Image 1 (tube, helix red, strand yellow):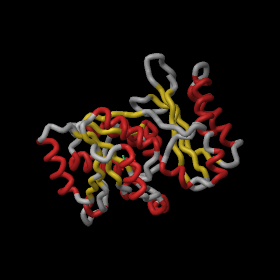
Image 2 (image 1 turned 135 degrees about the vertical axis):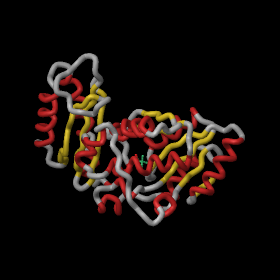
Image 3 (image 1 turned 180 degrees about the vertical axis):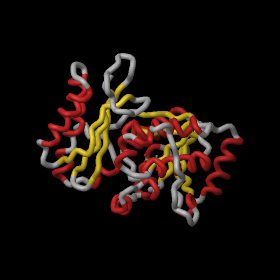
Length: 283
Ligand code: PAF
């Protein structure tokens, strides 16, 4: 499997493939790959001749320095995992910070029609400027036909679709369903950092979201979010940061339900110092 740390070498390699008529898909990641990433990789392999998986812990999207420092970095394991999927249809782009940012490690400022102000945007200052900066940069380097993102970061997915629309980028964005552990916990690279007790308690998040979905059939969004808040108040190990029922196109909290709109419930929870997010469709 080919591995690149340098954008010019990667571009040169991909240009040659494109000249031969090879279609290129792209799975951007921050590494510490798990089955959720592998399901994106497998979907991308089904839909493209060749795929690039980027592995880059992007410093500008972290609002919390400790989270950035402690973010798992497991490049060799990641490459072995990808090799077990395919040795000749995947290449890895694992750039240095300098290859992406040069000497100036800063993000650009983006407006995504207000999508960036909700939820993660409200709780993680500058996060979506960092995401917008890195994803746009990676698209310019890789020039994929299609790029794959998980619905666990549903807000990120909507923002990337908006980025593509606003900048007229020639790439199709494909959203892929959340991959869950058997007990329902959404797969995340951060799960490896949970203590035993927090890992055992973490499925409470998905269970509560499922009950919220059932309650949403007959109750208002406000009633359901209050109910979720009450459940977390009783939980001694998990601390709720937010729960919001939002319209999937605006990501704004629902004031009054309409049968014509689609909604999701979004949640962010602290398990000790590990921040977990999840969401499910409500209708
Ligand atoms: O979802 C992620 O892993 C990251 O936000 C992404 C899209 C790779 C950008 O750094």
